[in-house]
Length: 222
Picture (cartoon, rainbow, N blue to C red):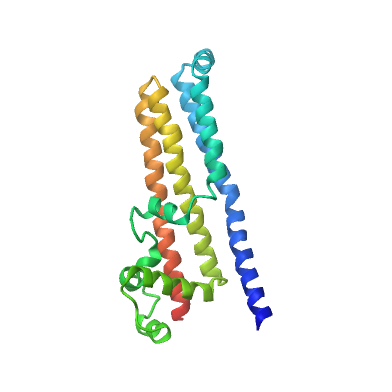
């Protein structure tokens, strides 16, 4: 019994690391694309190479700060709490996670799930957000190796981290462009695009999070 429990815990840890490691290449690519876009906007706004060189020479301190910010953002991405990332995705505080509303809000929206059958298996559905999340998480731990659950979990982790990076890139690049830019492209359009990127990422992450929650309940109900 003890050895089985140890193997189960080890499997959970490996599963989490596997999902996160698979997403790293996409997150790195997302960061590279944002860096390239910032460079292109800066290049266009400075009328080519001569203007860019002159601008770099006069703003090297600001550029160093932005570069340092990118490095720090990349390093601390895995240190930011899931709770804070959830706040950036769902714009809720407290109880930002979709599991906090698993039974009171989302359960009735999925035709795959028979609420009565699910209730027979797990008992009465709690109304308190914290209790809802605890019950949902207990169900998740029983089915986390299911392909539909793992796939939804991976998508949620990816879109959640892209949302966090989008917010960080807006602060570093979008606001940075406002303060050091000289053209409308740099001070208006580019920051607006960065805000839009964050909003779109947050919407995608919300949908992925709800799908993750519902996939877990659907597997349990079946």
